[in-house]
Length: 80
Image (cartoon, rainbow, N blue to C red; front, top):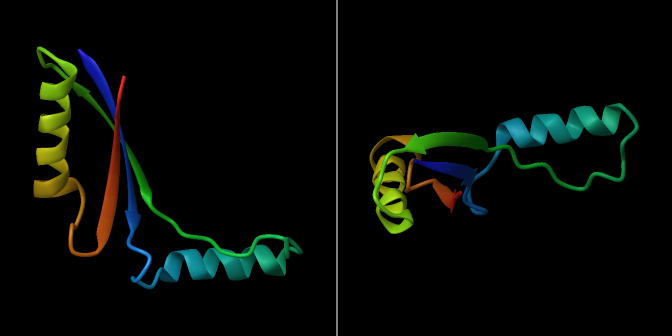
């Protein structure tokens, strides 16, 4: 059994209204040191596979088919 961790983020060229709202709120709280906020999603999957490579293939397929919008988002996979 493998534990996959996936970070999904908007591509840099895509506007991030949630990140912009969070950045504005942080500035209103006096946290002016924060220069930019981008908000994404974190997903954990338990994958039953024979090897780490096979587990990564399954997770890549899951991301491509459902978990990430490849037109607007990038994803990074870590297998433990």
